Length: 424
Image (cartoon, rainbow, N blue to C red; front, side, top):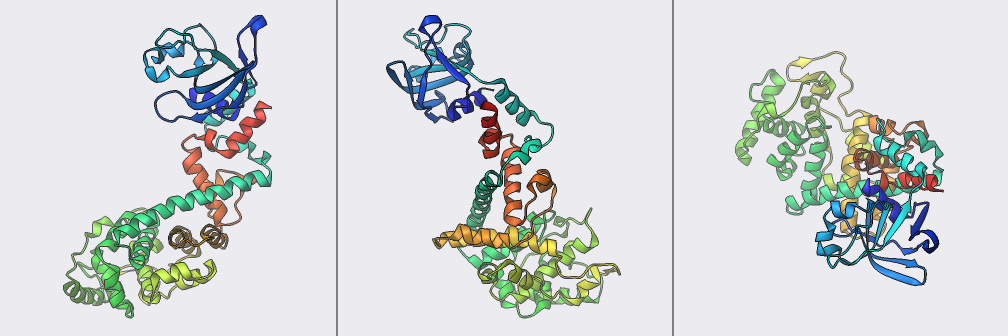
C-alpha cells in the first residue's frame, strides 16, 4: 500500500506528522508536498517542509516502515543521496542513511483508520464501482463536475483513434468517415471484419456508383465474399454486378468466414447490416459532411434512417426469409450507437483540427441530444447516478473502464472525496 501512502502525502490526508520524540518532538509543516515521481528514484521531487525554524527543500521518500529503506536497497543507490526527508507510517529502526553513512531525517505520518478502511473498501470491493454504496452522498455539483471532465477524457481517447485513421487514409476525411462508420456497423461482433472490408474497398469506388443502391450493395456483399455461391435471384443479380465492378476496380474479395453469424439474432445478421450500410452510403452524397455538419443528433439520425432495399425487409440472409423480422432500417438504439461512436468523435477530431474555439462544448451539446446508453457499465452506478443523456452515460463508461476496472480509485475525484471525508 505504498502507493496509498504517497497519495495520502500528496493530498495531505494524514491525521498528523511528527519529527523527533519526547521533549524534542516537532510537528512539521508541509508547505509543498512536491511533485510525484512515477519513474525510478525518490517518490517526490522538490518538496518543501518546515521543521521548527528550518526549511528543508528537496526530495522525499515514502515507506510504510523505515526499515524498507534497506529492504528496497536505497542505501546502495546514489539516486537517494539527496533525499531530505524519509516519511514513514512506522519508524521501526533508525536505518535510513546516505551512502556516506549520514543519517536521513525520518518523519512519522499517522493515517486515520477510517481513511485506511475507506481505501481498503474501494480497492477490495467484490463488485465495481467499489464506492457504489456511497455514491448517493455526492452532491449534484460534485457528481457532474467529475462527469464533465470524464466525457472530455472519453472524447479525447476516441478522437485520437480518429486522428490515426485520418493519417492512414492520406488525410481524406470522407475515407476516414467511411471506415469509421463501417467499423461501428459491426456493433462489437464484426467491428474488425467490417473495418477490413472498408479498407479493401476504397470509398472512392463506392462514391463512383453511389447513385445506384444495387451497385453499392453489390460492392459491399461481393467484397465481403458473400456472393460466391448465390442462393437466390436477388443474390445472382448482385453477383453479376459485382463481377463487372470487381474487374473494373481490380478487387480481391475477402473470405466470408471473417464475418461472425453465431449467437446473432436474424435481424442483426451481417447481411442485413451490410444492406443498411449500403442504404446510408447511397443516400449520403457527402458522407463526412453529413456526419459532421448536420446540426443536431435528431436530424442526423433521420439521415441515417435510410430506406433499405425491400429485399432486406423480409430476409435476414440470402435465400432465408422470416415473417417476424423487425423493420429493415436501423433500430433507434443502433442509430444512437452510431451517433455516439462515429459522429461525435469525428466531429470532435475535425473541429479540434480546425482550431474551432468551442469544439468541446459543441460536441458535448451534440451528445446531449442523444438518449443515454443503458448497458451493464452504466447500470453499475445504481439509481443514484442515472444518466439523462449520452454525454453522461459516456462519462460513466469512461469512469468504469479507466478507473473502476483498473482500481484507480486514488485518481478518481469521487474516490478522493470519500477519502478526504474519512480524514476529517
